[in-house]
Image (cartoon, rainbow, N blue to C red; front, side, top):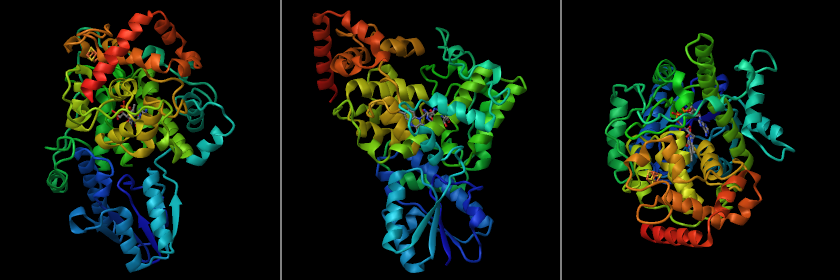
Length: 509
Ligand SMILES: Cc1cc2nc3c(=O)[nH]c(=O)nc-3n(C[C@H](O)[C@H](O)[C@H](O)COP(=O)(O)OP(=O)(O)OC[C@H]3O[C@@H](n4cnc5c(N)ncnc54)[C@H](O)[C@@H]3O)c2cc1C
Ligand code: SF4
C-alpha cells in the first residue's frame, strides 16, 4: 500500500483535495466509527446519529466511485478510539504514508499524529478546501495586531472573494455592515409566518443508525425518534434552497429574536451540513448573494447572513488554530461552579432556559442568540467552570465540532480568554431576554426584579457578576455604562442582591 487516506466524520467532502492525489490501484481509504467520539463528551444522540448516518452515506458514495475503502462500523469492532483502530490497521498494512485533510479538532489530530509516529509512518496534512481561508493566512493577518476583530477579517475576505462588492474597494450599498437595520424582536403579536422546515424520509442507513444509537448510547442526552438533519450533499442543497426561498428575506430582521415553541424561526439550519463538509460555504454565499441581485431578499438580510459565514465562521476557525491548545485551559474570571443539572434535563421553572435547553435536547439545535444570550449568558453570570460549559456545548449540538464550538463558548460566550474574541463579556440582565422574546411573559419571574420571591435569577446574577468582577471590568471602556448603573445602586441593594445570588446558587447546586 502506497498511501493511506484517512477520512474523518466531519470531512465528508466529495471534492476533497485527497481525491486529486488518490490512485485507486496503489492507495487505500480508511474510515472508522468509534465510541470515544461519542463519549469523550457525553454526546447528544442526534449528534452521534447524524455523524454516523452521514459517514455511512459517504462510504457508500466512495464505494460507488470504486475507491478501495476499509470502513469500520461501530458494531463490527472493539477498538475504543480512533488511534487504537488506526494503530491496528497500520501494524497490519504498513502503508508508506498516511494522508489526511487538516482535522477540525486539535485532540484528534494530536492522537492520530502520535499513532503514526509510533508506527514510523509519516502523516501529511492537506488544506481543508471547505474553508475560504487557511490558518496560515489568518496568522499572517493577525501578526502584530493588538486586537483581532472579526469585522476587519471579514472585510478582507469580502474584497478577496469579491462578495457583495460594487467595485474592488466599495461594499455593495456603501456600507460593510447592516446590523443597525437588523435584529428586531417580533413585537407582542409574535412571528406572523414561520418558515416551514424540511424532513427527509429515513432510508435503511439512517434507520439502522437510529437503532444502533438508541441501543448503544441509551443513557446519552437527547431524543432520537427520527433524524431531521441532512445526511447527504443532495439533502444539504435542499436545506439551503428551503432557507433561501422561505427564510432569507427576513433573516436579518429576526436573527436575534426568540419565541416560545418556535425552535427554528428564520435560521438556515445548515451549520451541521457545512461543518460535516457536505455543503460548501462558497455555494451558500454565492446563492445568497444572487437572491439579493435578483431582488428576492434585501441587502441587510443578505449581508447579515453572509457575515455569519464569511465573517464569523472563518474568523473563529483562524482563532482556534492560533490559540490551541492553550485556549482549552483558560479561565480568566476564575469561574468554578458546576454546570447545573437542568442543562441536561431542561427541568427548570425559568422559561428562557427551559425553552432553549428543551429544544436542544429534542433537536440538537438552538439558534445563536439562544446559545449566547440564554444558556451562555446564564452560565457566565452563574460562574460555571468554563470547561464544563465547553463540554456541554460540544456534546449537545448537532453542528458541534471543536474548531467552531470552542472559540464561541470559551471566547465569545464565557470570556474565559480575557477578551481574545469578545471585546467585553456578553453579560446582560433578564431585561435583554424580555426585549428579544416572549419568554418572560410565560415565566413566573419578573425580569426587572433582582431581589425577592419573583426575582429573575438572570437579573440577580447579572448584578452579582458585575459587582464580583467590578475591578477587572473597570479597565474595559465598553463596560462603562453597565458599571455606572451598578454604581447607582446603594450598598444595601448590592448586599441584598448578593444574598439572593448565594441562596439561588445553593438551591441550584
Ligand atoms: C456558545 C456558542 C456555541 C456555539 N457552538 C457552535 C458549534 O458547535 N457549531 C457551529 O457551527 N456553530 C456554533 N455556534 C455558532 C452559531 O450559534 C451556530 O452556527 C448557529 O446557531 C447554527 O444554526 P444555523 O445554521 O441555523 O445558523 P444561522 O443563524 O442561519 O447562521 C448561518 C450560518 O452562519 C454560521 N455562523 C453563525 N454564527 C456563527 C458563529 N458565531 N461562529 C461560527 N459560525 C457562525 C454558521 O455556519 C451558520 O450555519 C455557537 C455559538 C455560541 C454562542
Ligand atoms: S423572567 Fe428571567 S428567568 Fe424568566 S424567562 Fe425572563 S429572563 Fe428568563
